[in-house]
Image (cartoon, rainbow, N blue to C red; front, side, top):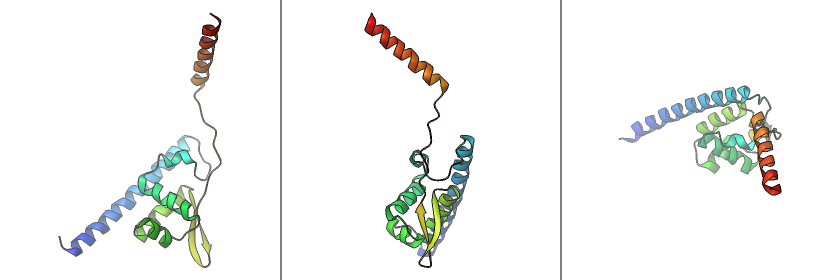
Length: 140
């Protein structure tokens, strides 16, 4: 393949990647709403549900504390357009905030408040049964 064909292929691939990230962002937002999680900010358990590219960008922003898309792109060795698309998705999800610092747009991670675990009611019954079994074993 010649260089121009490779550039065109990479450009199309980046476009597909952005579309997939947008679809992922929509699905994650729908999941969050379905679970009743309207709170803003990142909860660390959400890192497990993120795709690797979004997670890497988020962790890169966190490491830099406050950074421009160009700084993040340089730190992660990824092109600026891809980083900007991923930052938009993370901003829509409420995981990063965009602000101006010294005339430059910078991003920072928003850490959400710890959310209470939503345990199924059955878990308490199972725990009660285990405690009773343990007590019976101790006294018999």
